[in-house]
Length: 239
Figure 1 (cartoon, one colour):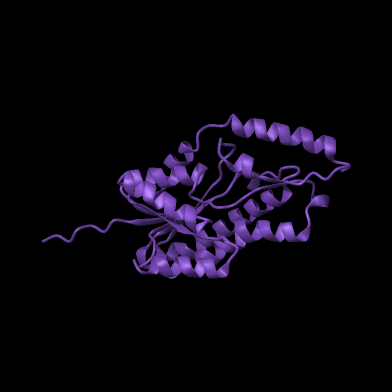
Figure 2 (cartoon, one colour):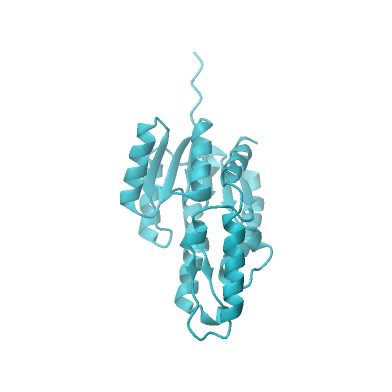
């Protein structure tokens, strides 16, 4: 008797809304078992219950990428099933403000969530990914190729993601693990409202930041649906 084919498991971080939610929905609809992560445990429970009610093969787990213990807990939970076949790094946030006004603590937080946490998670999952000949998909940004004024630190994190992705692709190719960096432009998501904005009163950059922020928000809110990225990621998974 032929052994039934194992249903592949995909891990998607930052899955509560926007691009992450679109990726989760698309992969689940295409036959993958999906684990999506969100920061708050209560929200993870709520989203899991909603997925179960709609008969979707999606589980949500809490993950704070700035916490080593949170990453450890997630890896342990995934290990009960042997680990994921696909990891999609989508979680992250933006900071808007002049370099002069963004303090070291905020810069560290931006890199911890957007770069160092995902790298830590990837490192811990690589043995399982090698065993499954899986794949890693990074959701970068065009801002990681062209620096944006008043979003220098966000651009820098996306530049870093692109660099790590390129190197990781070469390191893992001999082991059968594929690595891809998807670099979207502006899409209409909750990212716009969630962005941290630093505009202190009396700033010499006030006129520039006001004009730039208005243009950025207009362009983002008029952008296409994040379903486009979800569809692209699903196609990459099947290549």
